[in-house]
Length: 402
Image 1 (tube, rainbow, N blue to C red):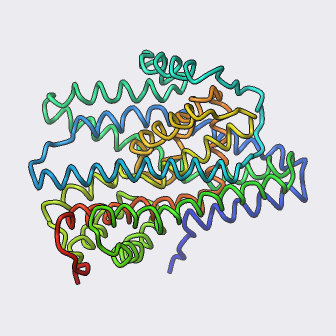
Image 2 (cartoon, helix red, strand yellow):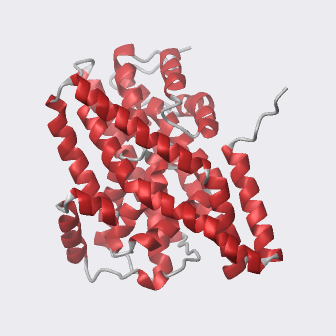
């Protein structure tokens, strides 16, 4: 009988352990092995802008209008937006209370903006960048602009053309999955280089960063989400919140894919007695746009980069960061660790160079063993939580469906 190979998470854990050992015991060799990590980061830099452009364009072009349970559908989408923005604000507050820094190479390349007005000016010019230059330079704002415009334009295109767009999006996503499969080797090289050049203290910094992300996501799941549900339903929110974490969150924790967890969420919604007309629309859409965990990841990592570079985050830029993080989170891809590829978009608000921000992404992959699993569990379970709240709005109090 052919033995099963370990999954991606165990492989990444092994890569982290071996990289740390090599960095401590063989620092000279470990520095040379750092090339593996640099190649991994280069591949991410190459595919990330194209991924954003193609996925968002295809999603908009192929979105179908629905007349089912209109007001509750709108309420659910409003809760998705409120929850994602709330998650970004929570991440901002947690990062301000417990500021994080990490070891980065070429940190001097980041240049802080002079004022919020200059940030807004840069954002406006990045929004109107031409698509070829946006792809070449990693301008995610420009990629998003063109993705939305092309997606809206292609909504009237023949169905065959729109199917081809989806095929293209699936193809790019498959390439990303191939790159992610190389994560254990790439992370091994990154840990080798980090430990050999910065010592184990840098790894301790990564553990602190991971802990901050996990605590923020737990607060979102166990405090903020129940408050939102209570505000809508006027019922005790914890029975449904805990049930969703148990039946949806645990599965999503191990699959690390909101899209893969859609069948689980559909079955759970039926158990909870939610209107089928409602959850048939909101659960698939939520797997794409309801990304509280991604908003937390993007905000925390962007602020970590700013703290590392000594950039002062003003109240105005903090508000802008929360809005951009929420919007970027809604565009996070359905592949594992997809939110990490959108961190450069948030970092660009502070004038942080693309090369430096991609180093932050690489750090995110090192801690993704915990971060991405927690993020997906929060994202996916919240889809059902908010759909339930919208369905229960205006009804009398009664326990979740049996």
